[in-house]
Length: 266
Image (cartoon, rainbow, N blue to C red; front, side, top):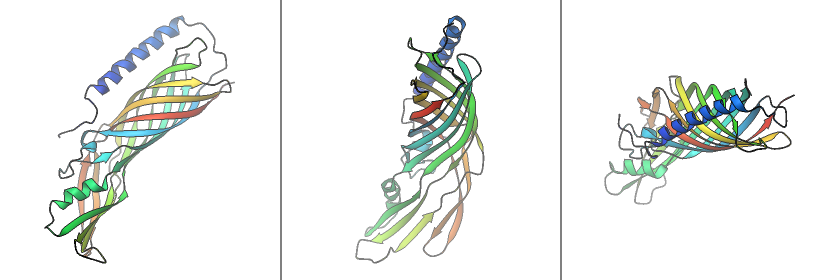
């Protein structure tokens, strides 16, 4: 399957290398660091929000191709619990949800190619692309200042997730005065039939305040291990004709998020 990534192909490799180096640095530091933290720390919970940037077929804007998702940047959310089992290493479990906006004008432009002169297509979006799931795995934390209030935080998570396809209505109008569209076609949103495994690798920075709150900044790369399979997408038209179509889509994307959370301890 052809892909058209919006981010240089070596970006994911750089994140992998950087994360591995940070895990190694954290491990070596844990062997030699005997200083105690200024406040008891037994973990933290963080709610983060930001942007999700699709890559690959999901981001391909040429909607005339059957494998193009025509997805664009959208909002991303995550609720994560971090629980250390050693000074610099711990376990993480996170629920995530991402949305990828579709451009109505891109879909209309693709459909316009099939219309005769004198007719124009317009699109109303009903539902955008989305993905949601649960992940768990490991995180490391290494302080980067003397007060141990700022930490570098690489993460490696695995999980399961589902995707949701977009829904929209295409209206066909005459260039002349019309009170209603001549015809319309509606594609309903559908949830993927399969529950796919997921993989996330990322890098973050976390700041602890004196009153046990924390703030975070993170960049993550996430991919589904298998394509999202949509086997029952319903399409209907204004003549009350309907059909069911199938669609497979790879789900790969980056997220950039800001977070706020609470530390908990003794």
